[in-house]
Image 1 (cartoon, one colour):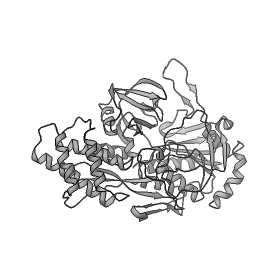
Image 2 (image 1 turned 120 degrees about the vertical axis):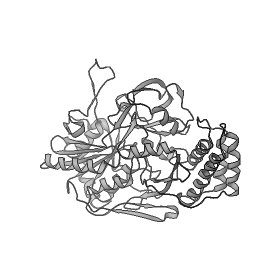
Image 3 (image 1 turned 135 degrees about the vertical axis):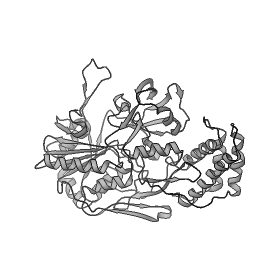
Image 4 (image 1 turned 180 degrees about the vertical axis):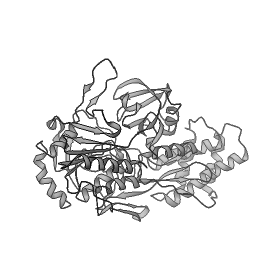
Length: 493
C-alpha cells in the first residue's frame, strides 16, 4: 500500500547535521503558521516545529537536484496553510503538512515524512508491509491514483487496476488529500476490512478489501514450453537479489539447452537503486550498468558489472510497459545498451530521478530528489521513458499518465534517440504456451484469472505480449524481426 515510497531509485539514508537558524524569509512563515495551530501548544513544541522548517530548508538548499528559490518556497508554504485539512493541528503537524505540500510543488516525488512514515518505508524496502497491496500516487487533480496493484495481494485479487482513482476510503472523501492520509486510512489491523470507492473511467463502485500483512515475493519464475526461461521482477527491495539468484540457479538446472530468456519488468514501479543494478548485474559480466548525476550534471556514482553472467549467450527479451518505472527502466536500458537483450512491449513510464531519505534532528525527515540516473550511453529516461525495440499494441489498454504528465514533473533531458524498429498488434501473436511456475507461485497458472464469483469458472486470460516474446524465439510474427534486431543489438545500435 505504501509502495509509492518504493517507486524511486537511489534510496539512501543521510543524516543531517549542524544548526539551522531561520532567515528573514523563513521567519515570515514561522510567524504565519502559528495562526493555524488550534491545540494548546508549549513553547518547546513551537521551537521543535520552527527547527523542522528551517532545517528542512537548509537540507533542500544543500542537496536538492536544482537550486532552490527560497523566497518562492516560503511563499508556497504560506499559501498552503489556508488549504490544509489535517487531523494533527499541533505545531509539528501544521508545519509538516505545509512542508509536504511545498515539496510537491518542486516535483511529484519529494515529500515530508513523519516518524511513522519512516517506519513504513523501512517495512516496504525490507520486502514486507501491512496494507492492501497497491502502488499509489497523486494525479494532477490531487486524486489518489492507483499506479498498479502488487502481485498476489488483496488489492490484486480484488481486481483493482492501474489508473483507478480512489475517491473515498471507508466513506471519507480523498479528493485533495495527501498520499500520507490515504496510507493512514488504508492501514489498520490485519483482517479488518477497508472499503475503497473506485472511479474507473466514468464508473464508480465500492470494493471491500481485507487488510493483510503484505509479504510479497518480488521475484517469480518458471519455464515456458520447457526450454525458455522466464523470470518476473515486480519491484526492487532488499530481498530481490537473493530471490533472483535462487530462481536463476533453478532455471539453469531445469533447462539443459535454453532457447531464450524472458525478463519481465512490466508494472514494476522501481525500488532501491542498488537492488536494480544488482539484478542487471546477474546478466552482465562487464560494462557500465548505471551512473548517477546531481545538481549541475555533477557525477555522483557509477555501478559497473562484475558478477557472473547467467544464461551467457542465450537470446534475451526484456518486457516493459507503461507501468515500468525507475529501477525497471534503468535495468532494461542497461541490458540493451550492453548488447544483452531486446526490449519488447510499450514505452515505459519515464521516471529517471533518484531520491534520498534525509532524517531530520527535529523529527521526521525528507524524501527529496537529489539527482538523475544515466544509462550506459549517458541517456536520461526522465520524462522520456525507454522506447522498446519492438512495440506491441494492445487493444484493451487505456492510456494513462506517465511521468511527464505529472504536475511539477522535472524536465526531460538527454533523450535516447532510438526509435522502435517494428510495431505489431498484440492479438497477432496469440499462441498456446505452457508455463510451469515454481517457488511461491507453483501450482498457479499465470494465464488464469479468478472471477469474484467463486461459483463461476475462471475466465481464460491471454497474456498476448508474453506470447509475442515467446514467438520471438521461434516461429511467431516477431521471429521475422529477430535476424534484423539481434545483429543491431550486438553492435550496440
